[in-house]
Amino acid sequence: MQVAQTLMKVFVTRRVPQEGARILSQAAGCTVSLWDSDEPVPRAELLKGVEGAHGILCLLSDKIDAEVLDAAGPNLKVISTLSVGFDHMALDEIKKRGIRVGYTPDVLTDATAELTVALLLATARRLPEGVEEVKNGGWSSWKPLWLCGYGLSGSTVGVVGLGRIGLAISKRLKAFGVKRLLYSGRTAKAHAAEVDGEFVPQDTLLSESDFVVVSCSLTPDTQGMCDKAFFSKMKKTAIFVNTSRGSVVNQEDLYQALSSGEIAAAGLDVTTPEPLPTDHPLLTLKNCVVLPHIGSATYSTRGIMADLSARNLLGGLQGTDMPSELTF
Ligand code: NDP
Ligand code: DGY
Image (cartoon, rainbow, N blue to C red):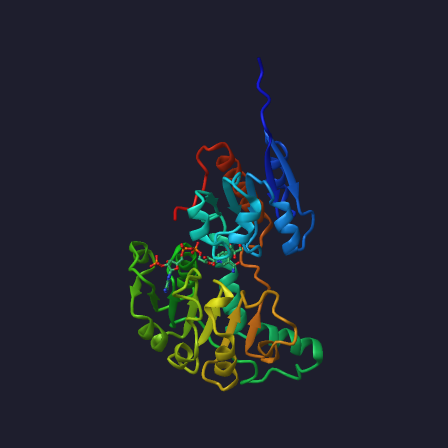
């Protein structure tokens, strides 16, 4: 006698690149429903969509908290996020319920490091201002002191959080002739040797660096870490770059530091909230370059992230290995 197999229900919170969509559409034993849009799923639709789900494929813009887990109910076995960051997920609640989590480390490291270097150079060498001046007729002549900025050659760079991405950023920056590479964090890293990185207290990093690059994860410890006291320890000529999460920065304090000349400039790929309202004070400053969270945004990286997150999801549903399971 054949026993009818119950289909497992999967909810996907956004349209994802075809590399992931294809895997999900071909998965046996699953019924997949999708928030079929490029825009985030409204909260009410998320709560409805996850009802009875065995698996959820989510994005960093979806807050996965106790309410979502309760709405999903006891079937839920796995949550796979299309991101390396997992600060949008209530891990304590997820753990309590014995749910497995998949994420996408490594595959986006190079793209994010590349974007961080681009943002650092754009900020330090004032590229958006220069482009604007060409368009608005402000370019009258070659002038010795016009649009001067700061160069990497011979500089000291401080990396807050020398993880996978912090290391990849450091490797790239070293090629620009950086003289000293400092880093801070909870623990010294063996891989720092690859970039001659010096593990220093955060205060030393701030007072000695010409460029401060934040690439740590968002945790209760790093939430609001870049505040008035942080910026006051930096050099007046220093450039601040953040490609981790917006909440690591106190944006009011950053605005004060930038507008008062306490630091030279800032480049941000991440903000709070996202999107940053178009009337936000930071956007009035010429010495603040803001990007719309595009660190990992290359076609190939997003495709690989989608593939990995789909395979993570299937592993969790089938109770087998997940290619990148988060241990917590
Ligand atoms: P890793 O886990 O490899 O690195 C995170 C680093 O943060 C670790 O080295 C950790 O150091 C450090 N850290 C933790 N707490 C602190 C602290 N209190 N002070 C300083 N450093 C600390 O992650 P990844 O490098 O892969 O990713 C890092 C983050 O980058 C992600 O969590 C995500 O938020 C962000 N990201 C942003 C992208 C974008 O598009 N802008 C793209 C991809 C990622 P330790 O081990 O000592 O705790
Ligand atoms: C992540 O993966 O955490 C990034 O912020 C987006 O790629």
